[in-house]
Length: 229
Image (cartoon, rainbow, N blue to C red; front, side):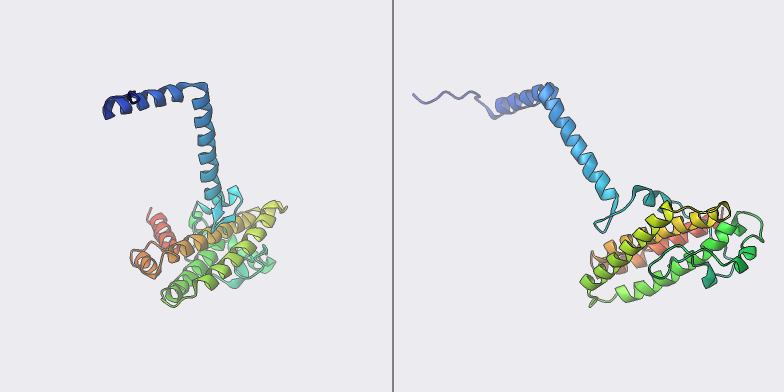
């Protein structure tokens, strides 16, 4: 005689499997396995959130990048306000003493020293974003070379940012230091986001631009939303 089937129907097998799964989930071993799996998932998600283009980033860099600082559109964005953010090695550079008085000559949040300093970086991000969009719309773009170049820039910016974050500044320069950290972090994040979109293909990138979803376009919309409040 053949071996007698333990379950006579598919429904019975499924019911037995569900019962076993429920018993295992409630057992000490099942709970430990689930806790380990949840911890691994959390770690993986956390690590992915702390990376840009697979490059490790300090956690507080994202905290600085998130808020958009007001930019004073009535202030002239002179190169002396670059803070070192627009040329390698991106080391923080304090504004010359001769230009400091002009940063403190206004009233209100849109004319604050922080807003006046910020306009230079906002304008640079817009100019470079529009120029990059024209370049990256080409179908013959060497993506391997572009990615290598952007990664090198991000690494240099990250290292300079960390050095500035860990540096000691005087009380009078505290707001300059803060502006550097905010815009330095934002530049890194926006570069990474834009390249990630371009890596999805030229059609996705061009569509993102037409739909105003490129990082610099989103930044512009957010800035004008603040202006209208």
